[in-house]
Length: 253
Image 1 (cartoon, rainbow, N blue to C red):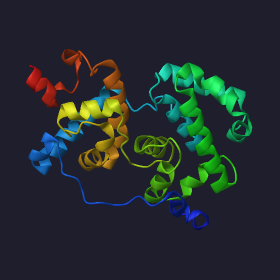
Image 2: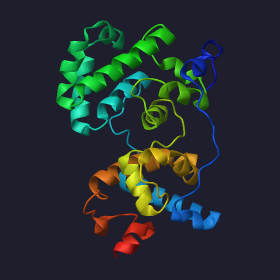
Image 3: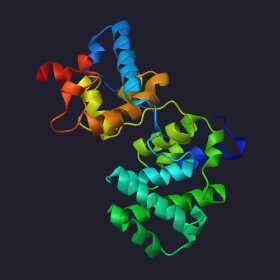
Image 4: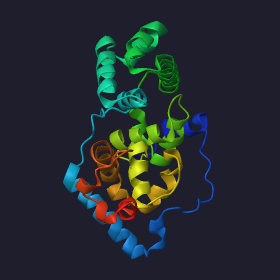
């Protein structure tokens, strides 16, 4: 991505994210040498790729489409989120038309997904801000910016967390970032790559341990692995392709 002079002030409008000191590394993997650490991470990512490939998990290719889709997916099953997203795209020919519609029409469509009031407010708020900044509901101009400029703008939008922003950047803008959702967090902590209690606390540490070329693979592989094998309760460790490298499995065994 290249920086566009026309949108050079976007990060000012959205607020520049402060850069603080690196947080303490909490994962057990950090007690190993750099060479051994790299070998473990590379092998885990290779095994996840062999098992699951590198699917897009249904994420749209357009940045704004993807942002709406991910907001819908929060605290909602993938099946329901995909159904609601398709209904929105069918009902509104563009996001500008959605923004021009009555708030009640969006809430009615979102109701089966739960949290319709909250998500409706977030989506409409984000669309209003985007239309103001770009002249229409369109995030394609972000493709001309560098990732350090894109991230603070996205997280300044209503309903856009660090994870949502990095998902949009990874899936649609080609950024080598690592979004951390509940599945990625669970698997990373069980592997011993981080020891923080919340997913939103792990982005910096996991991006430090997972090299850029493996971040997409690790994210999508962890999502599928977390759904199918490494579940929150009663994980199927006997079927796990990465159990050899898992601290949780070692202690459980």
